[in-house]
Length: 496
Image (cartoon, rainbow, N blue to C red; front, side, top):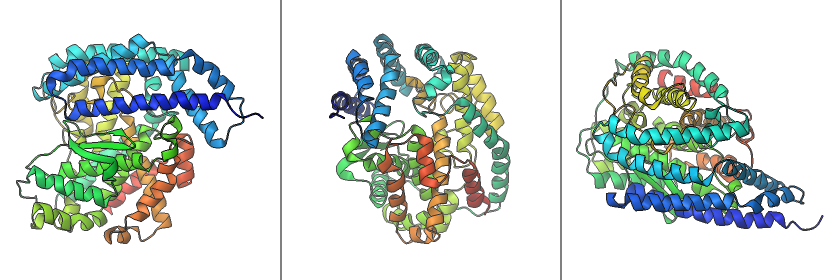
């Protein structure tokens, strides 16, 4: 066969798109970390303009012919995978009109910016004024995608984050978790009730916490020549693979959430920094899904970061930067970071309670996008489910209830299942690592973290989106997603 001509043209178009996405990621990071409040309207307009430009690049009529022609060309296996991912992005973009893309960008920017102060003020009524438009536009997107893809509106949205996963799968997986999770939480809380626990005595100055976080990031292999740490209202990992931006938030009376937040976001960052550099400019070179992305952050935070072995490794760093005290001993840190106590805030939740927060949000957003409830119904449903799943009363407490997360402000519906899917993938990875390395805990405690990072690099990071999610997990662990590993991990850590 002759040399391909269509595929190189596609590579050029998608490389241009990646450069636009680079700019978009950076202005979004700036908006969340550095931008003064009065810059929001202009930034929103600029971001919307950039979104329309990216949409126009993907919907260029010439791409349709190039994609069809490339299918007939003599391509390598990697190029075939690349073409598959190009087509997936192209199909999605061509189902959405530019006017909707622009309207969503503007509505999301307005809602997210106002949310920052409305959350602090416990102002659900004020939030609702912007949020209704976000919901209406997201439903419009969902309908367009669902009609073309032959699926439910919520499945169409979830496909953005978890390609190939359906809500029927999530219902089954989460339904099983709901059967055993409440009993396990109660059992662990009863067990821990008789344990001695020392609480750290602070204040813990922000600069000391920052220096501690930087030291732990270095231990975890973060490349500071290709990224940085900053502060935002809601911790996140942003930027691009060549320049990863992670954020945290600090409280001087409590260093624990900030430290684990940094470890969590460093997991996201290491994934980005570990992606194959020769494919970054193409869809096939990106992270496979948000569930796989979350599996990296939770491999770092939950599987590694909260393990007694790792906490014993970093205990001297805590003493160095925060001051020595009995509460910061390795043994007490292990008790602190495995303490189970149902609370209001998802990002501060312990490992056992966290899935309940995710299931609650999944059930609400699914009903919202399917038209079974309206935005006005969210607080009452939130209160009902928080009480049922965690025994926590959130009535009237919007700030610590349905206003606590940023995801819905810009219409990121379908995202929340990724968190618990990620926890399940992470547990499955570490079961595979332990099969290969039976003395894993001893090696971690001795500072040998390469055994973990090398496994992730080989099986996950370097693979990017060369394979669909199920194939990726099968190749890495020997089987498809099996939630039993997650259940076994929790039982071993908390009752073993």
